[in-house]
Structure formats: structure tokens, C-alpha cells
Length: 478
Image 1: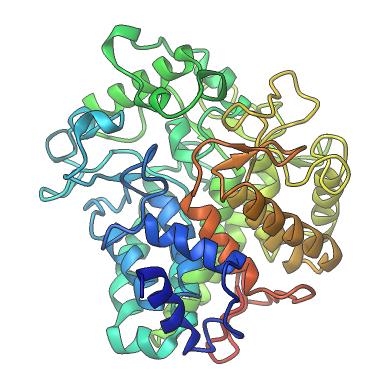
Image 2: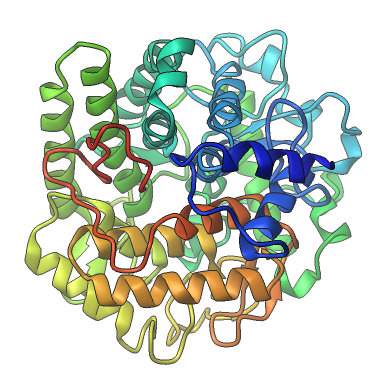
């Protein structure tokens, strides 16, 4: 029996994970195969070819899917990532596998120099990491993983061990990264927001002098077409920002790029709600965290909501005026996740995602990463038009939270169909579903598993619990 069959056999013995068992060659089994192929023994790589290390928000999404298959492995995924946390609280966006050759990925460990350049910020000495971060999905993932098998979680002390690390991570973001002074966290590099070369970054990046092309070699072009990847000019600016941050000892507050992003902050708010639930499970009160999440939701609306666009926009902290960036991005739809979002804003977001700028349910299969009508739109270029499965999952969950069951069910069906037909691609053409990027992508397979366990028509309640209500005796619907 191969390892995929073993995992499927073990999982089928636990109806909390899924019921009934999948049929051979089903979408479920194919997704399991991807996760098994990408498993390293302690964590899951996004892609064996293009991304051969552990990525921060990838691992959070992967754990959300793995909980249906092996709650133990899902816990291990998060524990491995959190073991590389810095003393200042940040969770680095990459944890490097020392067995992978340095030239397999750039920027490599010898670029980031975490153990030396990051010493003042408390970088670990025994593992090499990057020095920047990614969106804070982790507390939400930890809570959902716990709910998949509360007995195992309690027996292993899972939440008791991860809670202090997650709390430190949120403190870092809420204090060190409040660069705009209004309570929201800022990103200091496009890679931190996760949507690497979104048109939202064009204006802030235009002020950055790029690093010389001869100073680095792009390993990503060994695995992807140049016309689908960021341009050399943009990549030079990414390298310049990362170099300056490293050479400044990874200290926050001086970066020439600083942006308040709606998706990053919405995920922080959702994870604050999740931390409140974790605190309650551990016998403490989560009242203060729920209140903080509500305050952050108010700040998000005050700072980033744009009525004219019918969605949230990014705010450029370093342009001299702190103005909103007039680019419609899928990031501005992700706050649908938030349970305390005013109903009129929810209605506006639903109209926007289904309207001409994103076309969901009319012209596009999945929400595109940016405005269909924008000058920068390209259906194949990385984060400048293609549809991504993690953002589609977040929007599906948000629609369901706010009672938009018909739209959520349609998006779920489109997600599952496109994931399967694309071979669990990294991203796809939003019109045709044509696969782009890396095949057999980790979070695509994992979130496919999660939606397979959320039956059509299921609701996701949110009263007082944050993004997903997991109060029903550890139920596993997420």
C-alpha cells in the first residue's frame, strides 16, 4: 500500500475527518496525492520545483486542508513553521530546507543572512529563514486544526504550545507594524502581502531604485515563462527593498515601501477572533481579543473602504499624503471574511465581485486577482489578472458567512471543477480555467479538500466566534 492509500485508509476510520470514504481516482484522492508528493516529513512545500522550501501562509492554508486527512500532520505543519519564529514575534515568510541547493531558489538563505543580519531582532540560530513576513492566517488555521480532532489536540497540548507564539506574532504586527499610526498593520515589501506583483504596488514601487540586474539571478524563470512572471524591473525593486531591510538589521519603521493592505489586515482580524476562541479553550477569556478585532474592523473600514469603488483599497503610507491607491484588487474583497462588517458594505462587496470589474458568475470562473477593466490586467501574468485558489476560498467562506449561500455554492462548485481540471494548478486564467504557474500546488489541493468537506448549502455562522463557528463539539466544517 503506497503512502497516499495509507493516509486515505487511516482518515476513513475517523468520520470527523470525512464521511463517506472517497471513491478511487476521485478529486479527493487526487488532492491527497498532491499533498503526499509535497510532504517533506515535517512540512509541505508549495511546489517541488518552483517553491522547494516551507512558506508561511502556504503552510497555514495547507494545514486547513490537512486537518480533514490527518489532524496530527496538520498540527505538525504549523508547529514546524512556528519553531522558526523570531524572538521579536515575526513569523518569517520562508523557512529554508538545508538539503535544498542554494541555487534552487532566489533569494536563498545566503541572501537573507537571517542568523547574522537578524540577530538583533532575535532570528533563530539553528535554522535559516527569510526576514520578511506573510499574511497572518496562522491562528485561524490553528483553531480549525484543533476543531478537526479536539481530543488529539488536547492530548498533545497543541493549543497550549502554539498560543503564546501566535499571541507574540500578533503583538509584533499590531505594534511594530502600525506604521500609519491608526492601528492597522503595514507591509514593508510586496512579498509580505502575498500578492507579489499586484498593480497595487506599481505606484509605491515606482519610488524604489532597482538593484542592478547583474547583482542577482532569477531562479523563478527556470520554472516559469517570463511573460507570466514579474518583470526584471519589478524584481530588481523587490531585491532592493529586501536588501535595504536586511542591511538595516530587519528593523521596522524606516522602509521606503509601507502599505496598509485590506486582505492582510482582514486576515489579522479573523485570526484575532480565532485567538479569542483558542484562549477560551485554554480556560481564559477571549473578550479583549474579540474587542480588539472589532476595533480593527472599524479601523479597516475608516482607513481603507472606498465607497466609489464599492470595495476596500490599499493605502500608501510613504507617498507623503497617505492616500488610497486607486487599483481594484482581489485583496479588497477578502474583508468579506469579517463577521462584524456592516451589512451595506457586504452588499456592496457582493455587487462588486459579481459586477464588471471581477465578473464572478458572469464572465469569470473564479475571482481574478485584479480589475478586469484595468490597464494592468493580464489573465496569465502573476497576480495581475489570474485567479488564485486561496483568494477564491476566502471569498467563498466570506459569502457563506454573510448568508450569500447561492453565490457561495456556485463559487464552491467552480473552485472544485477548476482545481480538478487544472491539475491543482498554482493559478489559472480566470476566464477559461487554463492552468498557469506550478502544477500540483499545495494550497490548491489542501483547500480543495476543505471545500469537499463543506457540503453545498451549508452555512457558516459567525456570531461572536470570528470567521468560522467551530463551537459544535469540535465539528470540522470550516
